[in-house]
Length: 631
Ligand code: COA
Ligand code: AMP
Image 1 (tube, rainbow, N blue to C red):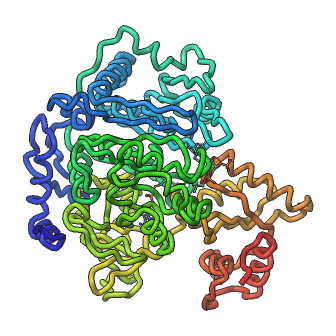
Image 2 (cartoon, helix red, strand yellow):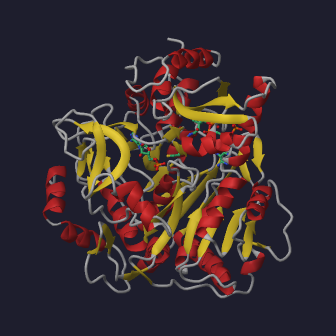
Image 3 (cartoon, rainbow, N blue to C red):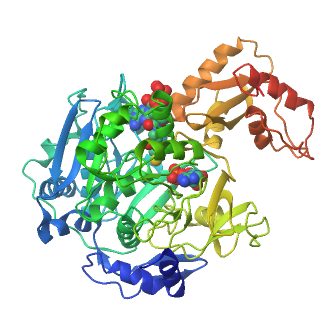
């Protein structure tokens, strides 16, 4: 029997041979002459001179292999009460037509196209149509507001934007069109045109000269063939939160992405072509890119596009219904979804109504999986629950349980072991490797494996500064943790200003920039406080401009509204307090980590460099007024 250790050792002995073998599962119009290119200065590329196409590998090759009648996409929308399926052959026709229409309007290789759509199959079709013609998509999550969309328009400079008329949240229509128009009005760069998919729940008026209708603009155009692109050609850009309000444009290269995702479907998620795979996330996040759209389709699986929530659409049994009804074999979601179900249905009574014998394993990622949630999920489902750790930057698992090779024993609180491709090390501040069970910065020895980011969009210098500068020769993950004596990894915290709210990655720095723009706010801080359901939630501290004596609740309310308008509802910014001063070091650095400890009622060591310890008592008292720092 092949073991994880064998496979990992085989990779380590000859990484290029390992990934060249994996690349043989991908269709290349021209095979790459070599696996890895060292560009110098710690920059690398995989399969740079091969010629291939993402859409071809995700759609056309399955049709060519005689699998056109297999279902590619199952759309299940408890929000609209609809279900439909699309075969690989249908998908090919639909995507080729959309791609042809984009091409006819002048979109070509290398052009960017922003996609702003809800969880409908057309979102995947738009992604595939863009890659079909060698253009580069950038999907923006529907929970982001106009300003965030505008920031991405100005960075990616798209030739076109593809959007739906609306999204649907429980009890609320998300009016995409005014958000889209608002974003275009705010941005300096203007797209040549926008394509609008009209949803019957809320069609919108089209602006002549700007908007074209999804169906109308396809009428009479010739379907587009796949455009062969180099292995190092960007497949997509996905913006993710960093330390500042300017999101980082993670670049996903075509060749490595195809190879790595295809490898992961069997070796990590343990599914064979034809099996149904479901990732309950959103196309706006990396999980949606890798495991709602590309991974399952590249590997010839059936993917489920689910428009709903774990609870309330209509009840806490929705996930079980979808698994049972669609014969899902491997299921992937964020721990927060399970915490929501557990809170609503602690005894798992809904689960008893469904036959889940099709399910083989549950995969959790996106945030720390707390042991209680894992144990509850194991008991309810009766299948192994695998935590796995990765990031937008890597696009696929850094550490996980390689169930398709060998299911390793689960250790609660650990996402298990590094995958082939990743030499994960725990380093001290000076970059020295630390021994077992010692907390430090988690870094990955360069080069990173195929599929991971080669750089940030138009920002090589920022890429080097953010990820490569701190520990020369390593990629800095931004996470802190440790490795035990068995090689199991433990992820404990972020080392930067990124917080994780219900599995959504957000920047407290970006939120501080929004608060600081309020005319009455002189200084502010945002921290991530621990939350039973969402893992973390943002809490704001506002120091008011001298002379402002309006009621504090009024100012807090305005700040909450401002955040919703600027970043979007997904920020979940609902709690803030007014304080006189912020705790700082003598050099003026705000002591955010200490404030988190106070909010969470955890003990902490008084920072040696604190300017005035009394301020911490004021912070505690303020937090108590909104239900924190109770212990
Ligand atoms: N478009 C527009 N708004 C959105 C949105 C979208 N795609 N997704 C979320 N929002 C809004 C919600 O409507 C909510 O708005 P509200 O403040 O008006 O209620 C806000 O953003 C916060 O949403 P969310 O974080 O989803 O919280 P919730 O209270 O609505 O639901 C959970 C809680 C746990 C059920 C939900 O967070 C969940 O399903 N999480 C799974 C996480 C996940 O899949 N993460 C992806 C990474 S793997
Ligand atoms: P994102 O880029 O949105 O996928 O967020 C990546 C970040 O989420 C990681 O850097 C971690 O901080 C956190 N994260 C993701 N998965 C896990 C996990 N399994 N355990 C702990 N933290 C996780």
